[in-house]
Image (cartoon, rainbow, N blue to C red; front, side, top):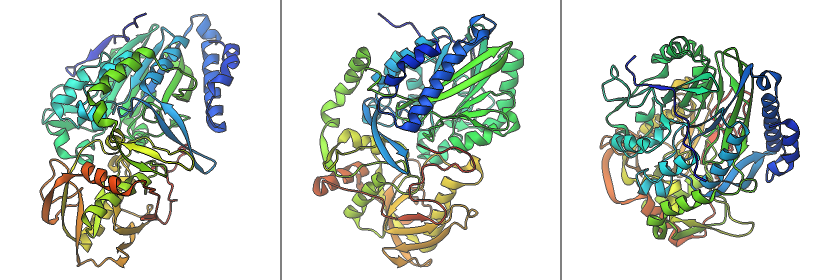
Length: 576
């Protein structure tokens, strides 16, 4: 049977002014593959949602039961994959995700509240994999249309193909689009590129959404990616849009759907401009919020990444007010949800033009490749090992990327590294550049990168991890003020000398000045190499497999563990 279309919003602003008993009967099968804490959270969330649906106010029609299903940061991960969990102080791995699994799961959850469910995505969906990169994003939206999203927001990485492709790729979605803070360059007085808000009628309750992408995008990524786009901060106009939605449009529930990272989203929840917002549905930092975080004016959620999780928010709205609410972060578990057959066919067709290229095995690993740690990761140590092997400079650097699911070998065995997985590790095939810097430049650069990752001012905090490198040892204190975090630096085991010259090699970010290497500014004697990072890693794996990268202590924080999993402090939240 053909699927019905996603819900059409009541209007878009263009910028110009089941029972508990039934649930418990199924609970055993719901938890397959889940650990104790995750299973308990899942069961509690689903049981509470069943209670809401059966509440007297809902069953008598005095109130509406509304469900929001929220994904984000899928990063075009189409297949079932290894996923990382942190339990009892150590990593655990399970198979999760897959767009076909997600499709079945969303359908099942939608059937629990069929007329009153909205499905939304918080961005970074059509970037982050081989199929996405090789098709410039175009292969991905048609797949998501099968899931029947109601609303989508562009993410910070979806500018990677340029403004025109961003607009084209977003236009391929059948879902409504929203983003209030992306404008054609220099035209912030004109309507934004996408509608700033959307309104849906959910069983007679008017639900409004305002969307925001990360205003730091032009700094975080290669400047050329967002050329032609001006970003503004949500503080500029959020209060105005909330007033429009509440007072002029009669919305009883107002969401911000955001792709700014947990730190910025928590900060926004404490700003007066968020007065009148009920929830910030967050994204970007891949955090797994299992209980909404309460800010001064609203609550904040974030639903993980890679199609491994769905955030499920159930609300009871009575007389225009939220009376009750429950939230659960649900695993996209292929042991519970069979893959949707039509989606499997669509995914196979999307992969077919690139299948021979991307399925080629380029190496093997004996240890898990993962990128979930803030300070240092095995995956990025592999990349910088390859760069140092090829060029043997004083030090090499790689960006602190957050995307890419783990790759886990069987116990005592090896896992194949395919060209497709390389594209997930490095979704941009960057050119390589080297040059010469002083010791003082290295210290200044490290202080800047530490500020990007750990700024006390949340509006300055990037969504990525701390920069990666080989050849350096760096000890630092996260809690110190900006410019005072670096405690010790050595270069190949020797203390750094501030007036000595050192050679550095890293990626060339498109649009940066010639004298910049991977955000290190003022580099002397810059030189481009006729080889890409992809090619270097492929060569390295050909000669060194099986590899076994690990955390080596290249970066050490005096006030945080080596396995730090989040940049956010001062809350009850823990990544797991």
